[in-house]
Image 1 (cartoon, rainbow, N blue to C red):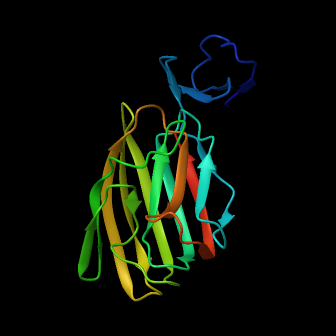
Image 2: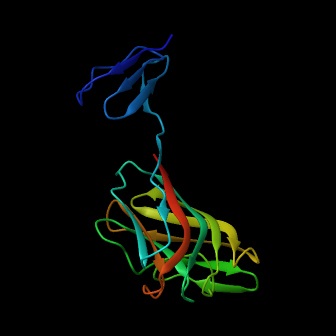
Length: 191
């Protein structure tokens, strides 16, 4: 039988084999009483992408190693490509590398992680994008999904090295002025 120990922020010592301990984090122990952190998965609050020029998810904890961004029917009122930007203290707007492919066209990334190679007003996006760290503030990006009201499949990937620990994700457009007009966005982060 396992035991769950709830304590303060001070470690209580090494728990017995098979026990769990909570000190702001969950840990498991093996037969050698060595401690290992268990993975945590947090679903953020969904945001309606029906207005504004950007959607921000801030306050992402320092222990996060992977972020999944979900787009459900997201569209804008213009022809600028939707992109993800990440940051440490503020949003990083340059230095992104990678490429995206939709139908028979591709595009390179520079100001953010793109979700398509081109766009038209009202095009919907049903995508899952993954951001994962290699450590040392190096983040890689990969996505796939349906685009253009179901007419196309989109996919791509890229990378960026941040100057500090990631704490935010922004969804916006390349021109920064097109307005979101439909859909929902959310993130799941895990460590």
